[in-house]
Length: 187
Image 1 (tube, rainbow, N blue to C red):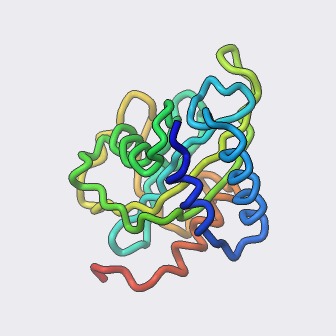
Image 2 (image 1 turned 30 degrees about the vertical axis):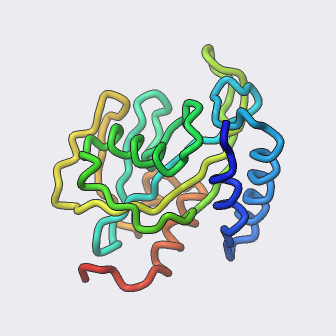
């Protein structure tokens, strides 16, 4: 599998968050060491892709209540052997939100955030890690969010309330990054 695109993205990505910087270095090593890093059958871990979806005013983030995990999360999922992680993120966002790809805008083709998290053993999978590559996307918050069968609900959450839905450190970090963004295009 071709990993060069992701390795270049990882090499150029810088973060002011120390905890995330350590995850960037670990992810870079992992991708270098595993030519099948995009394959979910790599038992101890694999690359996944997620989106931090904001509205044009950048005051709200799109979150979904994941049916299987029973958690509020950002859209994302497995790469399923696709080395184009940007394409994976766009596809997963469209599928999970129900929003047509034509209405989803990639804000930047650079990485927005990286997180490594443990997925605990289940009847289907052993304990493993997700090396989650995240991009910043934008969707008009006036567009309906039909969702799909993977989620109980898909909603816009005000940034100051994200931690009430999920207080994970990585979501807190993405909220902080959103607040540091330049003035929204449509303000």
